[in-house]
Length: 116
Image 1 (tube, rainbow, N blue to C red):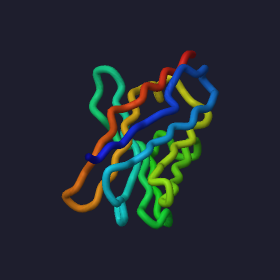
Image 2: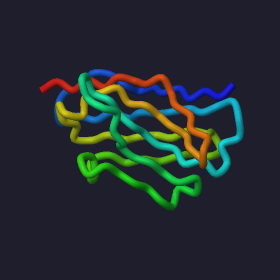
Image 3: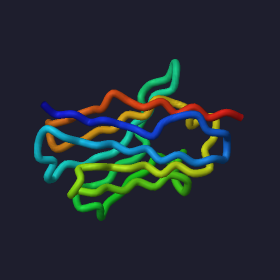
C-alpha cells in the first residue's frame, strides 16, 4: 500500500520558518517526481513546488520563489520543503505528491498556520 505521510506543519509567526517533510513508502519511487501543493480555505488546490527524480530540476510557484526550497533524499524516499519568510497568505494545508506518468499519489496533508 502506497503511503505519503507529511509532517512539520504548525503555527508560526509571519516572517518565520517551517520545514515540511514527506515520507513515501509502499513501492519503489524510482523515476517519480515529488513535490507539494497547498490548499487554503475556500480556494482551489495550487501547485507550490516540485523536484525531479534526479533532483536536477526544481520548479516553484511564483508566489514562493526565493522563500521556499525543495529537496529530496531518494535513499530515504523523502521530500522536504524549507519555507522561510512565511506570510499569512502561505497558510494552507500542504499536500505532498509523487507522480510518474499516469501514477499519481497524494498524502493526507499537513496544516500550516501563519499568524500576522
